Image 1: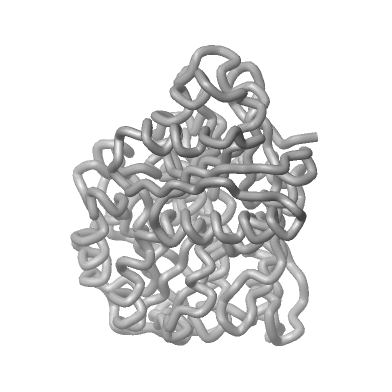
Image 2: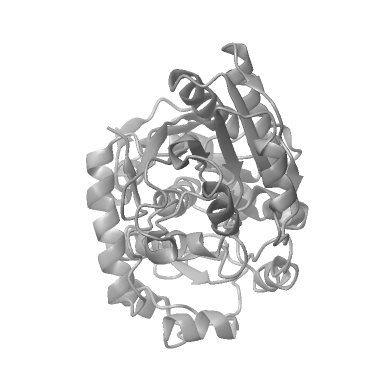
Length: 420
């Protein structure tokens, strides 16, 4: 366990799964991984997962909700007592500037985890995916959206709960057209996430008759964006799209001083509850897109559960930031169900059942919680889990085939809400 993780959660280290089942406490990274992938003497499968989620770096604002989703899912699985218990080893993915993953991912693999949840950044995941799948370990991201993963040689061990940015780009491109914009410029992060989303947005917008004037790139770690801002303002675009991570906090003040906020568009990588980070009303009217739950009412209930659980574990409030908490939760539930269906926690065995329990094969019975799905499996049936994120329904490549991208808008308090 990193010292950062310990100090942030103020949790005691424990090695007994029974303690984790009662309170979802963080387990020690020193716990030896078992080589027995089948049920133990008590009839329980013991699944060990690691997380490589952003505790530091340009997506650190997504770390708490993603870790909260993982923590809640583990608590739900363990308390259900359906023949599987999960232990977790928390880790930091960082970003492509601080490269925290370079030490964290080997640490997780050396501890013997059977699956790694993370990273949030597509660019970071592409840095370590070969290490993970090369060890026969499942690489499962709640937030990777780069289209590059759809054709990646991942040994059938990579999965994600977020849809490809081919979908988000289509939604964003159509939104720009629907809002009456004819010319658009973009500031684009120079990595697989940024360029992939930019390409998808451009293709849809231009197919609808629009024109992308300029799309200057920047690299992770850059702190001065004056040149990119000057370039996107050249030619007088109707709208400007920022495809960034938290660099948006640097870009927006300078951009808003020269360009009307209501014609600025954000994406999932920078759609955050900024609040007091800006003067009141500074972001009012800005719109953004990100994958959203199919059932918004159920998402409200889920978000409250995540908040209550996270705070009860001794963590600070999530402050209304729940981005990808649902995807993290669903990832853990799917892993647990697949292990139960396989009656094994070995990575390749669990991966072989993930398509089935998502509803992508097997003609299973629909269910929407771990406990009800587990009962179906334990009764000899096939479960088709419909999660908080949606039906999921993986294809043979582990790609989500049923998903939704929502449009959000900022109010006077610099926080966003679903556009009505």
